[in-house]
Image 1 (cartoon, rainbow, N blue to C red):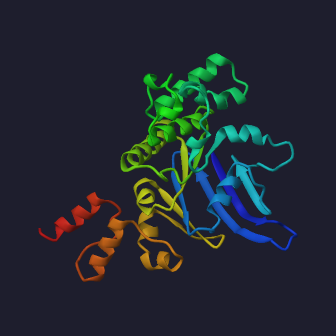
Image 2: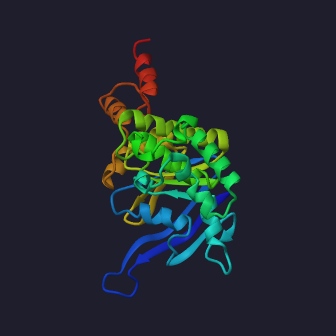
Length: 281
């Protein structure tokens, strides 16, 4: 399954003095079994883009296709689409509201009209997928840690069995342990369930650790697309549009610029250690 954006533009407040073009002629494909990161400075159009992906916003021009079908075509069932393309907004834990975790995670399947037995089964499967076992079922969601709340909220979306999961700033506000657990969970979803994952993030370290592919937005346009090494290998180009590179990559790039014979494209501490170790062989 895939989402394809073809020449998509979006304009806010059309026909008013406040009219502003948020996105301009975006071409982008999201696939199952892949983690795509969308990065860009504040106001670059990232949040608008992900809301177009599951039909919360309608393009001003261009098409959004799911499995080759225009989601704004006549008689297209966009409510069903949102069960296949799950969207998790920033700080989703603020939407937890039920008396216990299991009931909260059942809310989405209940809205899908599923019988009680099936929605409970889906909720349990989703909670297992995010690393919250049976001991969490009867706990109040308000008693959980920040990272646990975030995972419980994501489980509520997973219970609707999406094939593509979109998350806006998924690690925002989490402590290091919560961040590590969430990133591990997203990798596991891709590897074990084949779910496609899209993340919007300002954390270049998260993006480097997680993404298979990166799309870079600037002033509503897609200016770059490629692998993490390709994108973060262009430090100066990113800095020109107000973005940084992962801390490890920045250090290795500076070492290379200082004349040391290192590759300069390391994305993790482990890769950097290997590069530096070669200097002493």
